[in-house]
Length: 515
Image (cartoon, rainbow, N blue to C red; front, side, top):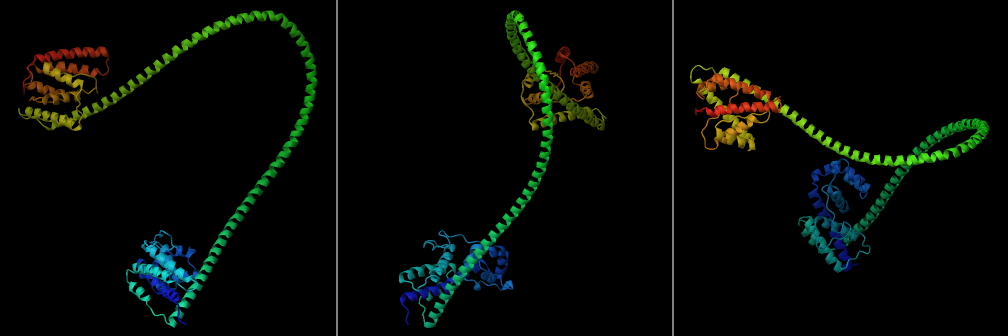
């Protein structure tokens, strides 16, 4: 019996699905999961695959044969291949219309082509009458043929095109019909197995929930038994307490009766005393009225005194605020004094270290001839220059009113003497003045003297005409007074200032020669 055109269309398209489309899906699968490492990849994903509800036990036996190295993608059907591509890494993305719907013709992605093959295979398996109209055949064939070409990278496109013109003899028809029937049976059995697996999984879940609930009920019963035991113990103790309380109440009742009898006697005495009180009240009303008038006057006086006391309280509160502010100011001054003391201590330590270093250097440099004074002066000049350059690198030179006034006085008198308490910045101001004075186009040499010996050497050479002994006596006296200024009051500072003025006038009268 000859086949109709619709039956031929069905068999040819079915053959394309079974023979070529499944091979294209396998070619893409092998490109993603290389056959040489397929067993290792399946072993890594075994936990996920064995728990997946869409993979049956028969398919698991195919995935994990014995030995594991015998696994081959040729043994996988289209459904299993698509399922593995969705589960194993790298996972395929979900198509726009999902895995169970035919993708849009314009969607040519890999995941869409896999969904096409899956959809057309299911469509052919569930097409019960075995017929396919020419319009559907042409549309389905073109769509599936393009998907096969893309998945196989055009390697199976010619084979797919040749299937459309294959001659359907009787043996091939019988084989295709048998395959169709077998696939329908396999699909039905797979569906039944999946349903049974889902049912078993649900039953297992329900059983586990029931076991948990039973365990919770057992624990709840145990807690209830413990609570009942506690309540029984508390009830027996409460019952004993009630019996003891009843006995005490009976004793109290007897005592109350005795007290009531005594109260009757006392009441009679109270009545007699009440009558006496009434008579006394009558005689004392007049006295109470007079006392009330006096109390009224006294209340007025107290009110005036309260007003005065409130004013005094406000005045005292203001004084307290002022005292608190003064205390804060004193506290800040104390902190400043402590900070200055710490700075003075640090500067003293630094000065002692510098003096020691200078003395050590002086000891290591003996003076054997007249040229040693020149070398010593040169060393002092270099030290002073290095110290000023160090301040410049640190950026600590800031123009202040003190430094400006010092420059003005030095230009006016030719001599400048800086005095002040320890830690007030005398040395820093002096170095700043030296730096500013020499940047004005002058050619003076700058020497920082650290000890009286160095000062004596300078005076003894050719800087001043006055004898060294007289100058040293005055400088020693000024040095002692300057050291005492740290502990003196304002009157002492005035005396020291006067002495400094006298010394300045004397130095101004001397002629300073440029070395």
